Structure formats: structure tokens, C-alpha cells
Image (cartoon, rainbow, N blue to C red; front, side, top):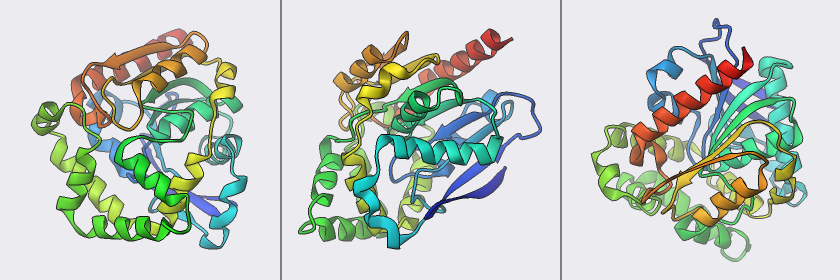
Length: 295
């Protein structure tokens, strides 16, 4: 696997590229807020991890991506189209004009939806896991987001992020608010290694950048563009997601033409630990179907 930093105006996006020697359509994985490009490698089924050409592409400002602090106040001018532009520019540098299959989780799902809507020639297929189009979150994450919108309380979020990054137990308590199926999460073999990786990533992020991203995302809404998506699209998520309500997941499926919807009963936001087997089967079958249709 190779780590790259892709230069864009006022920032760079990090990417891990794997199995570049294979002549398959690249699968682009995009992680969720506060995690990192290291999320995907340990949670992928072996047939994808070792048998497909894939790219893990970062969210803006997520270590080791870099975002120029002097331009962080540009948030008011950033739209869903701007967000899609960044990823089209990054993918142009990574794969040229080649179409890709996109798999995104949470904010990564939002990214995939906006990219497919505004750059249909780029996205051959899309799988959105707990994605959203309106960037207002619920639960504790939503509370942090609302506090980030005011200059009077923004400092509290920055300090809170710093505190969580120093204490694994506090990080675990925060992540627990995203879980729907606590039994499945506790019994998952992926829980400890992936949560440790997520904690390390969290500790490397710039609290000021994270706080600003919370604020920027709260203003984004891609709902009106969903009808422009033409690629095969799979919308999936947990019915008990505390951050992204199942009503929004269903609404996305209703707005994207000819999309498929899969809901995991009792599951929350941490799909890879709460529904590992179901995720693996769904991902493999989805990508195999896309490959067969392309032949």
C-alpha cells in the first residue's frame, strides 16, 4: 500500500492506494468524521482487500491530510458542490478519467452522494453507509456540532476534542453514544483493533480544524441534487443509528432514482463492528454485481 498527499488549493487530501497492479475498476473508500484513511484496511473482507484495486481517500483536514488554517474561515462559501469538486480534483490526480466505485461511511457517504450527483461520469456505482444529505447530526455528535456554530461555545468543543484525544476511556465513552447494538459491538473481533486505530487518528487531528468542519458540514445540504444521480446506488444503514436517523436514510433512497435500500435492524452507526458479516456480504455482492454488469 502507498500513502499519497494530493495537492488541492489551500489543502491536501491523503490517500492510501492498494493493489495498483490489478486491472480492475478502483474502489474508493471514504471514511467518517474524526476517523482516518486507516479505517478501511482492517475491516475489508479479504477478497476486496487483497483482490481488488482500492483507494482509501481522506476527508478534508483529517490527519495526515492538511488544511491551511489561514483559509479555515472560508467555511461560509463552501457548498455541497464545492465539496464534490475537491474529490473530483483528487480523483483526477489519482486515476485520471477512470470511473470508480465509491463506498462511503457517514460523511464519506455524503461525499459519495455529492460526487455522484455532480460528476456522474466519475462514479460507476455508489454504496452509502449511514450517509446523509443534510449535514445536521443528532445525538452527542449533533450537540458538539451545534456548539461549534457559535464563537461563544466553539472554544469548548476545541478543548473537548483535546481532552478526548488524551484519554482512551473518554474516547470509548464518546464512541459508545454511536452504538445501537451494544451486544454485537462488545462481541466483535474488530472492536478493539479498529477502535484503537480510530483513537490514534483522533489524537492526531487538529481540534480547531475539526471544530470548523463540524460547523461547515452543518450548512451543507445536497438533497436537491439527489435526483441527478444516475449510477447504481445502494443506500444502507442501521435502523437505530443515534446520529443519522433512519428517516433520513429512507429519504435518500426515495430521492435517488432506482436506488436500493438495506436497513440493519437494531444496528447503530458503527457498522463494521455491529454488522460485520452483513457488511462483508453486502459489499462483496454489490461489487461483484457491478463487475458482471460491466463485462
